[in-house]
Length: 581
Image (cartoon, rainbow, N blue to C red; front, side):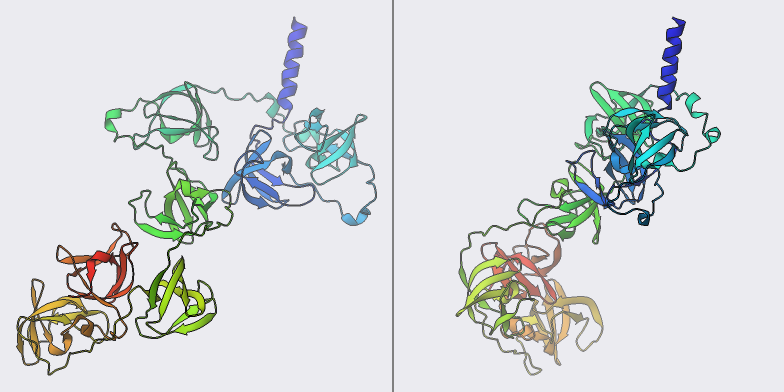
């Protein structure tokens, strides 16, 4: 019996001397090597079915974390990912000068010695890779015959048996065995202490349990706030826990030794959240190939920061079930997680939508002719120069451009130069110092250029009353005196010189030739001009009913018109403009 126990203890001691592939070694620095010197893929998960995060050059140093199913989790620059373990070594072998051997000549046999940084025996394998079976071990200092030396793995003969060993474990000089560490074989791992803990979170919501100590691992499940768990092994900021059939890791900040009071938390949110940082390369994706909005907060009510085109590359810095935080040249913002993919999407083939053609006209705010281009963009050559008022047949749309037929030519014109209504002939400017409006008549605030016009406190005064109105704002004449007019603008009384009013809305707007003039109409006395064609879009300002505006374009099917009020340009409901004051 004693002899059997002695043999068992000896076997256990020998096993403890072997390097374990799944345990973190004393040094976390490793090197990426490939037999042919090509780059090695860094993947998002432990397998070839996971996406490629980046490629690492052979010979590059990385930070080793752990090994899973033959794949090494490493950190490279600001990224984390998995590399096939056959490409990860603990040290770089000294290169043999290429000039000493002809390319096709067989390598000469040479003598070498087994070495290792920790003094432990080294695995011998049946083939050049960790995926091959171990055929034994060789102690540090063991003499071997090198049959074929390669950059990563070398073929050797040990005690008459041919096998493979990593080249990094071969030394031309016999190592000093007495200097090898002796404490490691006798060290006993600290026992893992199991404790009772409870799930906690700042918002009272559930917490995700990961299959490994990091957000790159899959989700093993979710545990509700206050759930009792058994906690044991600690891996950095993460701790291993079990609860029922859920087995995995959570961040230590989500564990507490005392059961939390559920009444002291806010109403649990439906989604688990994690505050730790990640760095994942991703791309914008949408099923219809359209751009995706980036918001300032993780909510559909958040302000729009920008819009990113289909396929735009971004970096995910915080990954969530519904919303994810991303960074790019635009700064930092949030998009719905369903609009992100780690695989670069193929170019989206836009289907040709059914389009109903209609008649329109060339329009420009300055009355100048407009270019008809060969394609939908200013980089395309001009096919013709079309005068304002030229009749068009609109046969399609492409972004901010319309595909049109003009005479015998087919081409593209920007949306802002196409109007469904034929531009009206210019109205005469009736403003002059000799023009005296009648008391009680309607007039319009006028100026020599678009913008806002300041009003004054009294006739002949140059003291502004702190108010300003866009050109085209309607007013009622209360009195006229010495070249000045007393006006009522809404509920406000103010003064302007006669040269700053006009009898018509078109006359109030400078350079009104070839401009389509309409008037705002609203049930509550004002009309809001929106930044986009959406009722909930940000308002650029509220303007008085009756104000004369320039209609840049309008679309009856969408129900919106693009207008200019003074120097403000935006969108209004098409029912909020009319052709007469």
